[in-house]
Every structure is written in structure tokens, then in C-alpha cells.
Image 1 (cartoon, rainbow, N blue to C red):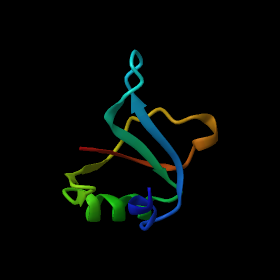
Image 2 (tube, rainbow, N blue to C red):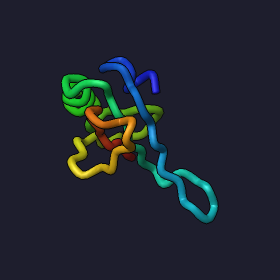
Image 3 (cartoon, rainbow, N blue to C red):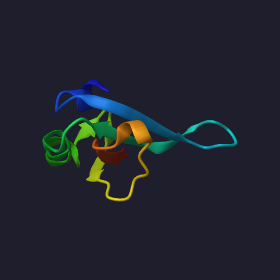
Image 4 (cartoon, rainbow, N blue to C red):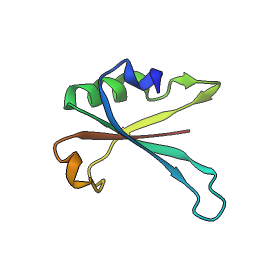
Length: 79
């Protein structure tokens, strides 16, 4: 998370797991408190190598936000 936190305040992380075995599916949704942070994360981390893996970071337009998260900005990252 430290890699993503350097671009802004993370307010939510949703690590997507396989429902049957509980293993990570290889991607997560991260919510930042402001749009500027999402732009910085996407611009600087998409295609970067983290922990030996190249990651993809993109903006998300249609992510279902919980009521408490209205107004936060979300990106998806995966490898």
C-alpha cells in the first residue's frame, strides 16, 4: 500500500478474492480522497514494476461505491 499511498490519501482498498478458495484474483480497487491523487497514481504507476511484477493502474468509471464513499475517486490496479 505504501507504493499507492505516496500519491495521496487512500480511503478504501477492496482486494478482490475468489469466493470459493479465498485467494486473491490479482486486482484491487483503491479509492483516494481526491481526483488529483488518482491522476497521479495512474500516470506514475501504470506499467511500473512493483515487487517484481508489472502492474496496470486505470481509472474506474462504474465502480459501485458504498454510501460512505460518495465523492471519493477510485482506480483499479492489477498485474
